[in-house]
Image (cartoon, rainbow, N blue to C red; front, top):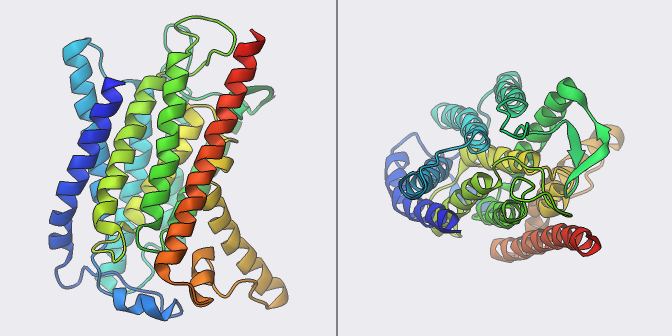
Length: 360
């Protein structure tokens, strides 16, 4: 628990202190955010707000994790684990892809950055290399960070993908979740606050897995997850980083996270679901992100097949703005939905653990 608190506090402090510096740097001429012309009229006044603030989240996450590792080295002599480093690699790699996308947007003064092909190649390379890495680094019990079995609250023994299938599924999950969080990043503080709730839920899940690890005692309800404590530490550092960034990103935002932050956070939640072996449970925990992505898909299908717009505008949060809701009203209600989703996911996880331990 001490390591988790260290990671969260350091992540929070670094994000709060670093973000104002980034606001100053990215407030220079030519570094402002471009806004969609067809978006809500109230958003046009946000044009020129500094972006790429997700850099603070990624750096603060690293700072929180390294502080926890240093604390562990001093007290116990243990160091970083393969699972923790793989998760940080995934988030940082996707953050770099997002950073390039943001940089091209602001330098060319347009709302489109990397072309679809370049962005796809970058995301795929990071996702596939993560998937491959997750099948290596066996510990003393033969556990790898990832599993070729699909998981809900734990592995489903009847559904295995094999090594190749696992890498492909991991790449699809990472691409899907990173884009889902990216779609959610359309209101001041929406993506940062919702991500903090989803990742914060994984702090609890990973910690429960650590306290009930089969490596400690092979009893009913134990978890076959490698390095759950390190996963909890990374998640805690990221939660603190999101909250620290939210201090400056809350309405009215003084800086946006941009694709730098949204792709990194989307990759992070996907990676957490893969490494904690809860891929299907993430659909519940991250239900808000799912709804946002589905709204875009439905809008595209509706327009291309029947030339109709199901929503006033997609992603979903813009629909309510165009319907007359104030931005802060949409924001708070969507935060509530994110909190409910996280609580429901945690409840399902706990119910599964309780049923197995009671039965044992």
